[in-house]
Image 1: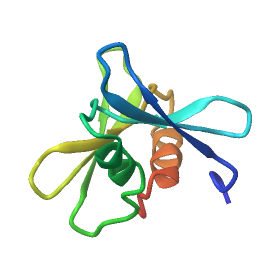
Image 2: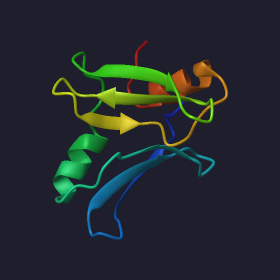
Image 3: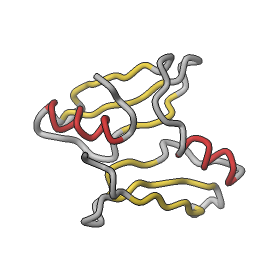
Image 4: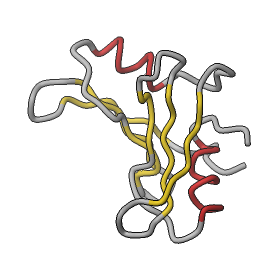
Length: 103
């Protein structure tokens, strides 16, 4: 299954906030935090969010004509987004599936 060998990294950004990123076995970043967190535990909670029925998944085309996704919590806050654009919508959906999208 895609993503089963992915690794997560938690790090502090230039502003001192905590972020996470998900890397495929080839080292490519396939997911990342959309925002910085003041506490490492909040960052890790977002990283380990897993599938939630109440989350909404949006697929859209960006200004460059590439397909992207974003995940919103029930309160409307973006809790995940694609780290890159994809030429095909199916590729964006496959990347979202690594993050918990069930279709």
